[in-house]
Length: 452
Ligand code: C2E
Ligand code: CA
Ligand code: CA
Image 1: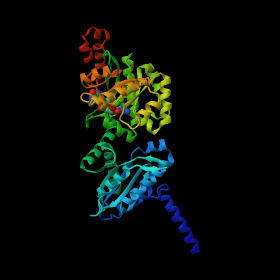
Image 2: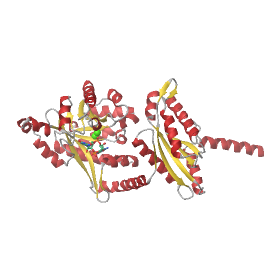
Image 3: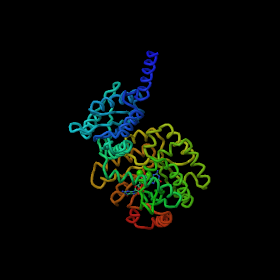
Image 4: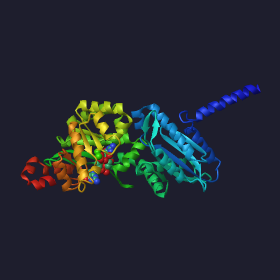
């Protein structure tokens, strides 16, 4: 009986190990990590510790382009690097995908910052996997605490948030959670809860920014941009709001709201198409094109009165679904533009593999256009590249007359930016259109034509 029991308990232990370890890397898995943290939290374990949160760079891309075997090997190497560089860690775990975390007691000899620096440095070096050189890197978030009075879950959230900050600061860096992040975190929570009210209480609106012909200055289309004037939070920019709504899942509702309002505007503007920014989360929805078709029909808007802007984010994560949606939209007669061209990792390959109608060159390309000869050459090549692929080329962020003239000389098709007009309410677009009437433009001196 005793022998039987021992066998059973050994079996149980094996099952337990299996359930708590990550088979790919041999590290703890998320469940085990959370258990350790919860236990230590419950026991109020004394002593300063840090939670480190890691997210690899370009992992999805590596997996997609070099195959899962290489991806798996890479995760194994990362696990090795983490265990080697985190001496004294209570637990090192793969939290899922390309995310890792560790609990590290802080001593005078072992500081989380020093560990993070060593790990970032080591993961920056290329790995030789299956005969291929693979380069990744990591963003690291660090949260200090003491489980005698801090909650483990909170610390983990903070480390995760600090990791996001590290990610946006650049690759291969770490960030330590601090008061500023704390403040931002609470404003994130506030935004989330205010947003549902905002949609019902008419606090949101769309503004429209003109895109003009580089050659004639004529109004060709407008881009719909979300505006939120919250009585409690003040003006919240879409650059802040959209990522939060994506994280919370509110983006679908928000995006539907934007599409409905943009279609209303398109019905008013008639021959001036309205461009809508669509978040990857919404675009990858299997019924996206059908939903747009239904909404267009209901709003009595022609497909040519609408176009869609997507960023690389859509393409990276769900290539096949994105390809399908793009072709469904184009079959419906709705144009699709690649937005923020040149800011991601693989803009060029996306242009080659996906059928776009146009591309919008990111405003960062324009920044040096005024001073640097090299920047002009790059711009010229990008515009030529777009044309060689039969794309309409748009330059965003045109702020000066000089930039506008140069882009015209470089044969860019459409220009958008504060130099011509800032985003404005629909009524103002109508006035802008009247001022941009081709007849009025033809009659105006050349100088004015460029300035409109
Ligand atoms: P985006 O799609 O690249 O939009 C262009 C952004 O550049 C807008 O910022 C616009 O106001 C700004 N901009 C226009 N001309 C100039 C210029 O000459 N100089 C500079 N420095 N900036 C200029 P905005 O409205 O703050 O929007 C930020 C981002 O938020 C957008 O970038 C887009 O990614 C996202 N967004 C805005 N509205 C929506 C929406 O309805 N849905 C989704 N999913 N995203 C949206
Ligand atoms: Ca856009
Ligand atoms: Ca853009």
